Image 1 (cartoon, rainbow, N blue to C red):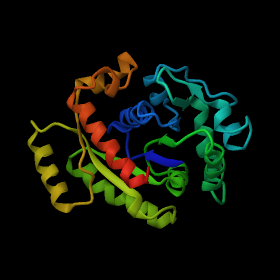
Image 2 (image 1 turned 60 degrees about the vertical axis):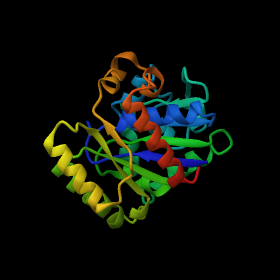
Image 3 (image 1 turned 30 degrees about the horizontal axis):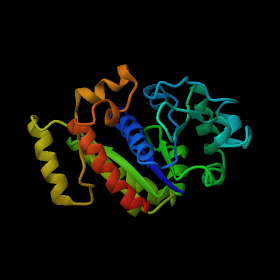
Image 4 (image 1 turned 180 degrees about the vertical axis):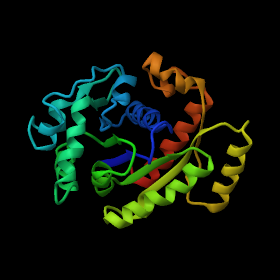
Length: 249
């Protein structure tokens, strides 16, 4: 079993759409896939047309109750894809982990319980630098970080890797940034993309700003299924191929 996490410093950068589409690609390839929505906003849950209700709540789950992730996972409309949904109680996970001496331990325990039922677990993390992100970094095989090609988000990536080093949660080597929401009609996007490619360290995929992705909030179907021939779907497939290689899948 491998753990692929999608995280970033701020919201609105394509984090959830990435997690949902990669989970769909994993599942449709035949992998037993578990998507864990760790963002209290529950966008990943909503995009898969699931009820935003976590049985027993976040505090009970992270505390070891309810029998682990399998007991609270819901079956999606996509074969092989199970989802641990999010509701407002997921905020309790952050509170519990923030006062825990070893925040990765509860996550590691929960993930260990899925080894017999899942080939890959994809984590949709809340934005920002938090105890949840610190714990996730400690258990993930790869950390996918969407970066909008603009000066501030590009510079903020260094803050993320600094956070991993300061907390000693993970090696920066597992960080896999990629370009997200790019619009090459914008001069600043073209300029920053050139700078990114010159710097190196980014994955090759560049997910475009796309009406197909925007419609996910209305259609509640991943782009790779609703619009498989779109440029966004093609870039998600490229991203998944790169992620699987980095994660050792």
